[in-house]
Length: 149
Length: 149
DNA sequence: CAGGCTATGTCAGAATACTGACATGAGTCA
DNA sequence: TGACTCATGTCAGTATTCTGACATAGCCTG
Image 1 (cartoon, rainbow over the protein chains, first blue to last red):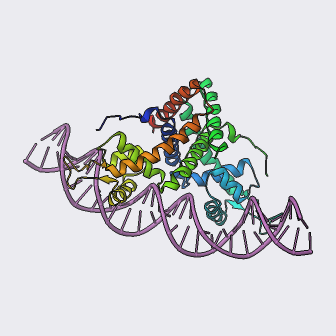
Image 2: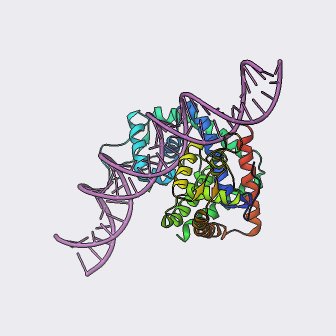
């Protein structure tokens, strides 16, 4: 409808394109996870636990980019539904190491396959050189944003 | 704490790195916008209107990657606070073209400068070749994710 | 012209994530 | 040892966004 770009063109702003790509990825993941009854944070938590068993609530929160309060309510739900177990008492400090149950692992396997297909689709149009460029560039951008805060 | 990577390494997953970069960008933008009393969606809406005056609620929603319901409540708040105006009646169809008021424009100018400094920081570590690579790669990824839905 | 299709604005309720706050355990340092 | 700092788990309340639903306007096709 309206077409005028006034000064800055959104299509040349790296920040905007980053947000757009991330939004497209989120939508695509939600589309494949919804039939499985899982949200993205849901899946992220299980995937993190599969790759790094024994992570604490706070560590999971950092890995999934949410607050530890948010991860806590999620963990309680996952625990209640039998996907995750945590010891009643902390082996050291206050951190409770969480682990997948067999049921959680099984649930994750289905979701993981669906998510990998999304990632494959995202990589589909890229050469392998572009893929490694993308990895390097994204890491650099993240570091630049975090370093001087 | 836990260090074991089991099978897949998160640091080599493009999807994870994309989410990480986008999360870092969001945090950095929130940090500079918070002192101005603005949220990211807030800012996105004003910036879109500055660059494309007359966008409708639905168009703004698509541009800011939220639902039109979410954008609607935001627009109503912006209208109430005198940053944006919309005609009482639609000139055609049901779409109400929104425009910045002088006050909205002024508020945006301060925020825009702050956000540009964040984007500059993000680009800081990249060569100009990497920057154009990043633009191309992000566009390709977004298109791949959207094409086959 | 009538019917179907799509897009839009808007309201209401539900889901999700966040901020604030408190208590506890571990490490540090005088 | 005692005070301080930091990280963690957790509860409560708030804020933000989403899903569902409805009515209306324009387009198009038979």
